[in-house]
Length: 207
Ligand code: IMP
Image (spheres, rainbow, N blue to C red):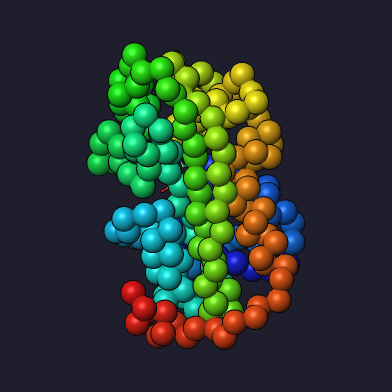
C-alpha cells in the first residue's frame, strides 16, 4: 500500500478519487494529518490553487501529497465561473445558489458549451508535478439528477443525453475531469522520480 495525503475534506471527491486510484493506495485525509483549517485558495488560476494546497500540506507534514482544484469553464461567459466556481453565487459552497445563478446567466443564450477542468498538483519525494483532466459538454436548461455534487445536475458531457447527476459514480468517473486527472496522476505515481527532491524549506521559498 502506498500512503499519500489527498488535500481535501470533500467526501464526494474522496470517494471518486479512491475509486480511480484503486486498492494499491491508502488515501489520508487532511483531518487525519491534523489540518482542520480551510487551506487558503488565493491563486488566480486552477494551477496556482492546486499547487498552493499541495505545498501547504507538504510544508506542514513533509508527506507525499496531492491536491486538486476544479473549475467549470462556460464558453459564453468567457470561461466563468472558472477558478471562482465554488463561490460563484455566494461566499460559501452553496451548490443550489451556484446552479441558479448559472441558469440565470445563460437564460436565452444558445451557446451552452462548457468544460470541467481539474488540475492536480502532486508532491512526491519532495518533487512537484502537475497533471490535468478535462471533460467537454453543455449546460442543460434545468437541473436533473441527484447523484454527485456541485454543478453535476446541470452538466451534460458530450456523447450523453443525461447530466453527471443522473449517472452512477462509476460512469461519471470513467469520463470526468477528475477521473481523467486522477488516471494521469496514477501513471505518474507508478513512474520513477527523475528530478531532485525539494526540501519543505525550498518549497516555501518559491511561494
Ligand atoms: P474545488 O475548488 O476543486 O473544490 O471545486 C470548486 C467548485 O467546482 C466546487 O465547489 C463545485 O461547485 C465545483 N465542482 C468541482 N468538481 C465538481 C464535479 O465533479 N462536479 C460538479 N461540480 C464540481
